[in-house]
Length: 333
Image (tube, rainbow, N blue to C red; front, side, top):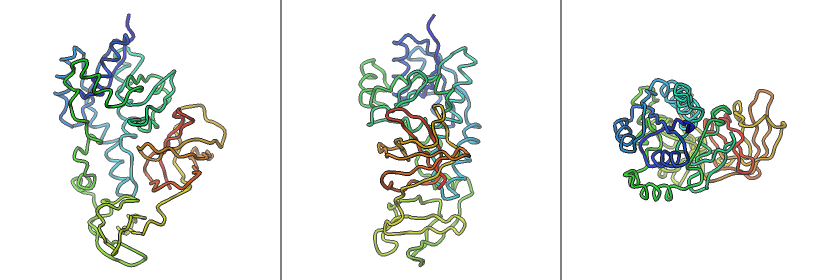
């Protein structure tokens, strides 16, 4: 009897090719679509039916609001820059897939992430499309169940595979970055929820130089959209939510050699108190050599070998030993 796996299936090219590759590898593939309110459920049903795959739709909207949307809003209003997809993978996507797998008698779960899973460990994929950062907060139990069929590929190759199988998803546009903000306008989304602050002061060298439309519209290191608010090209170097002020600078203060995180999520047995590692502080290709120290409360101190641009509270820090993802934590300061 073929081993059963429950696949997170959106109907896009990644999940469609993942389903094909799993089937070819001998898996009994059962698909689950997580309804987040994006309006794509019917398209996913149609795609699954066309591919001859069973699909169950699970309503994830309440969990998404509680575990991702509300924390995302609170973090932005506090001046942080959260990583909603990192939170969603841990608290919604893989949690609900695991529940569905238990109900279907499946030992394993699968997604279309571009990362590698081997023997319960997670690894970086090829740098062009590596998404291992997005999985840095998943539990060890979830990692042990996870199958990632796209780990050896890049997007261009996955589209070619889809075309080779004759899948209509081969030419389908990529999905939006954040499912609950399809237009990508974070500020407008927060304003629609009714909690956004009003206009406030732009501060440069201690002086008010202009007015902004709300501190939630800015992130640390931002330059775009500021124009010449201080008479020159400037960056956001501090957000003060308590006074609704946005502080600008010529670039000083944007780089940091040290950060502190909340409690770490270890994907290996907790190592000695201090290790050398590679750290990624946002979803990008950049990996930074660093010394990582574990505090008694479980948080981390990360000291970079060279200053890193704009590591921001609320973002996730993913820690690697070589290719292997070993830890994730949310940056506090």
